[in-house]
Image 1 (cartoon, rainbow, N blue to C red):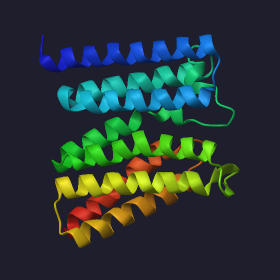
Image 2 (image 1 turned 90 degrees about the vertical axis):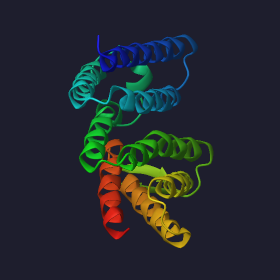
Image 3 (image 1 turned 45 degrees about the horizontal axis):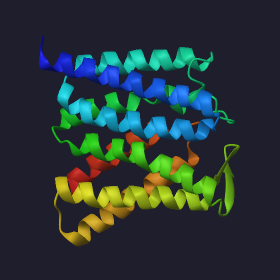
Image 4 (image 1 turned 180 degrees about the horizontal axis):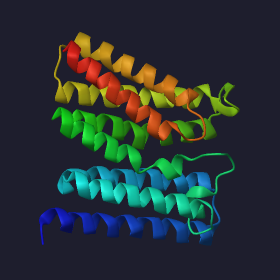
Length: 223
């Protein structure tokens, strides 16, 4: 059996196990779905980012992503995964969660540069939970866009996380002079934060990675 298929099997088994444990814990201890959703977001996201380069096959990754999308779409109307679906707001973020991984993988292969995989996906995996956590714990200065209430403190957390990720990864993969990558990282963080703020109903799970792919392509032209 080819290694990429073995890695794919490992990935699916680990992902299912993580979701099962989170769902059982959520049902037993009755904590907020917002918390269990963010835990699932980070754990399954990091797991995906680890295994995608190991699988390294567009067809397999597309099959897994589309299957996961259909599965999440079906379970959203039932009670099988309340730990990630049952949040007190209208959101499709949990359903579209698998799609950025496929899009970023394809783009990284097309451009032959791993930064298109790692920066948008790490931002997607880490910045959004950081914003939600800070926004809930320190709800400083609320604002409403598209009937969604967010906080300045949450947006600041998103910006800082994205800025730090951009600093590290742009420097690692592109290695421009320090003055340039500081400016590029600031631009990436600022525009990503604005897109996250105006994206309705969890669509930032898709809009932020796509915008970052476009920005990275623009940056590659500059450097």
